[in-house]
Length: 364
Image 1 (cartoon, rainbow, N blue to C red):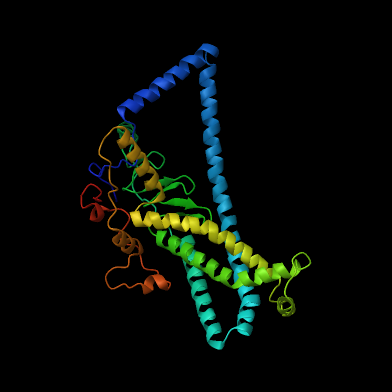
Image 2 (cartoon, rainbow, N blue to C red):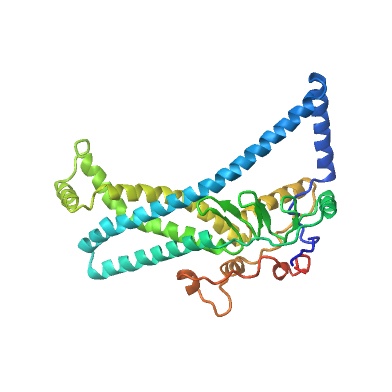
């Protein structure tokens, strides 16, 4: 069974313990607030207020986690319906339009690109939904050990699972388990993004964004022509444009599917482009979303204390970070990224000593 040695040399504390000065300041604030509250409240009322507030907060968090579990299935269904609607629009409207207006070579090129994008989008979405991110399976510690670990604020002790987890693992309150190399919980896949499905998640975003740009490039001229045609009483059109629009409308190439496809893909491309850009930055730095937040906090704390700024222990040169993340190493080529591939990520999600070049993260 797995167990983990604590980190001591990386410079980053995943639990972000308070410094002595910060802890003292917090205690002073709590003591001051307690004193002021006790002055105005009758005996015992403050404790009841604190207990009631804590119960409400915990209940609200549990309700939110349960809601995320339920809504995740709905979000997956919505994603499938929307993607299927765009696919239907391509076959029903855009493909006949391209066949009628493009050369044979141009139409074949469109068909190849469209189906290459569709296959990669569908494959990576199915895989990221169905692939477990990697649950931490470890024996629970005894109550006595748990008290000692909590008193020491052990960075790898999970208070909810009562286990020692490896470096980079975190607890997901929605999935109710610790996840290896956890990035975040995504309702659109009803799953956590972790060690074993992170590549699928990133490639799904990348190919979906490229697919949106592809659909936009086709539908934008049609959408613009349709909009001008139906508003020609307000903005006059050239006779040639009116005739072209009328002809395309008769053949069904300017129907509502064009407007739906253009508006939806523009909205998704903008939102997804921001998210994809953010994850490109994270992958380039070999960070997860959680680690980015922790590292920022640790850097600010070190700057305030005028201490050396800690360096993220798992990062390497940008190209090596990408090769490691995509696991394009050895005999495996970039075709494993351009085409569907089920190859496993680099490493096992437990041992990170090969990146830190230390033994403090080794599994024993």
